[in-house]
Image (tube, rainbow, N blue to C red; front, top):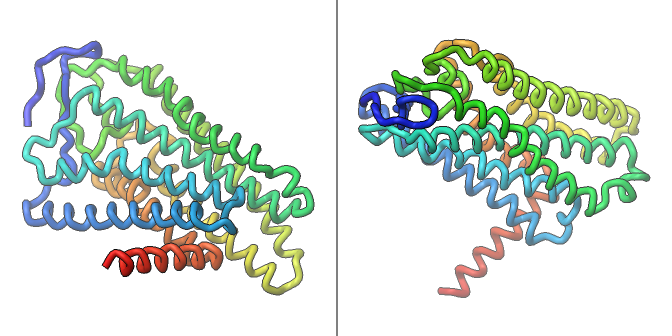
Length: 320
């Protein structure tokens, strides 16, 4: 590990050192195996949902189109930092270039913002389906669904553009050691060799606005949904509505519960161990559990996944 003396536009640091998880070599190898397994299962689970929605005409509805895009987002989200983390666990240098660090920061938090927008869009879809069932086919058309998808993707990348530009202007003169496993906002701001109140305030404002507006919108939507469901006579329709909304709200709770701890106050200096654990939870555990939550509690999705698996088995047998 060393402090670089090469220059860039922000100061004298041309690369950063990501400490990751400093522990014995045996434990690092174990962590590498465990995290690699979780990463591969996350890719497999979310890819399965995309394939199920793609292959089943029954799932060609706005709800499942949004879910398929959400699953693809989770693949991009977990891939923005986990591969580098896995490489650094077994690496001796544990370095990341200055440009690579800024790109990782931008893509990770763009995906994070897009996730909030997609969860809001999915709650809007459930609100219309349950609270306005007669108007749902008229309002939630495929054109509106496509616009929502474009808005969520574009909104995620555009929302983090200003913080990313400001972060590129932060002066880093050394040290260049980040006590984290990726280029997170707080640890990066802590390495600045000069006060950057404008950057800190802008990042805090953007993160707080995205988190609270999307969370309050989702909370309001599901409050109306819950009231509507409780008015439905007990039966299969009520149970199905409860099951679908419970799945969505569980995913919302997993994501926002951990994100709020970290980014409402991005300049806060929390304990590095706690910071890593919370970050690890929402950047690995949440994408890992999402396919399980959506597939295990949804009969249509389970049927579609079974068809995908059966088709895969038939294809293998045919090749033999």
